Image (cartoon, rainbow, N blue to C red; front, top):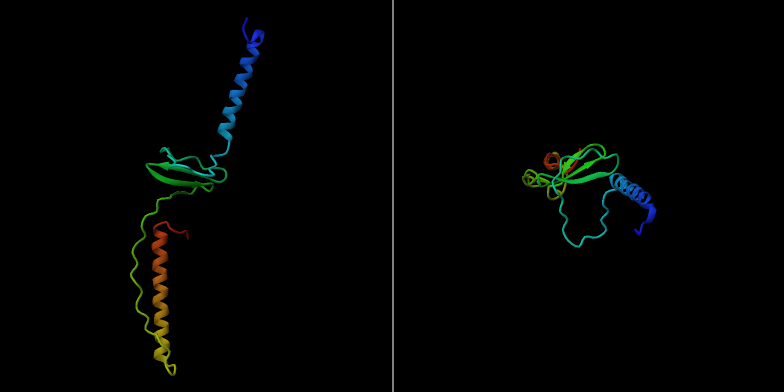
Length: 134
């Protein structure tokens, strides 16, 4: 006599239902949560994923680590090097004079304008290399 007896059909139906439930949970479940890593992770290359309804997707495409968020923004996480920015001009108004005059004031204005131009160059280089938004 079979160990399952006359209930083989019921057992098979129950197993089918359980497998279907597990498959559905796997498709709709959250991504992998990582608490601690004891070795490297291997991400196989995949095509661009669908835009997630919430959160973000970390994936690999053509060997490049990528991130796609719920707004549809898709970014490479391997940043390119930003363009070089020359050193700023030397500060001309290094010391305070005994009495202030138009020449000293103009030196301060020139120094501030040079610094503003250099900060703008740095921001443009960082934005163009996707190191910052805006």
